[in-house]
Image (cartoon, rainbow, N blue to C red; front, side, top):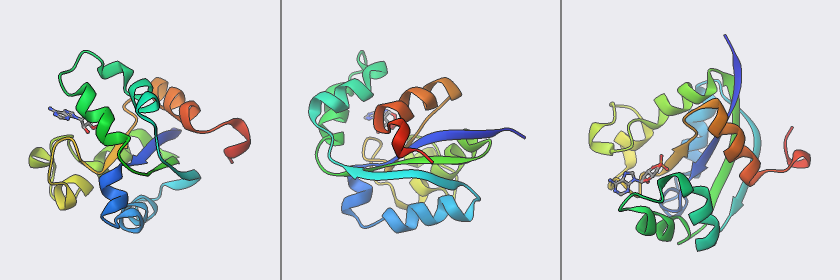
Length: 139
Ligand code: CMP
């Protein structure tokens, strides 16, 4: 068992569709602890920076426009194997391939507007957590 932290984002579609409580409830029911949480509206420049790893992808411009189109909720989740637990709760990036009962299978309607983001490795979790939260904001 290893206690990890991971960065979750509820994307603009999740916020606009009133799914914040539903999604956070799933995290808590799965045993993940909320260690930090904030709502903010990313600028296009901030979204471009967050998703820089995808800069060569054809969807980079569209994705970052979408991610800066409305408020998001950034969350630090903590728990045993939190990175994988969160990814299992989210389901596959493409909602059509997401396992039944996952957030994306239950609610997503598009591959881009897929409700949630979760870090994919401990290294990226640390980078993504630091993107949103300073030391004073973490418990
Ligand atoms: P996320 O887990 O935040 O990581 C990158 C995001 O890019 C992904 O979720 C989707 O929102 C988006 N994405 C991935 N693949 C595609 C695609 N083929 N077309 C459009 N958006 C995509």
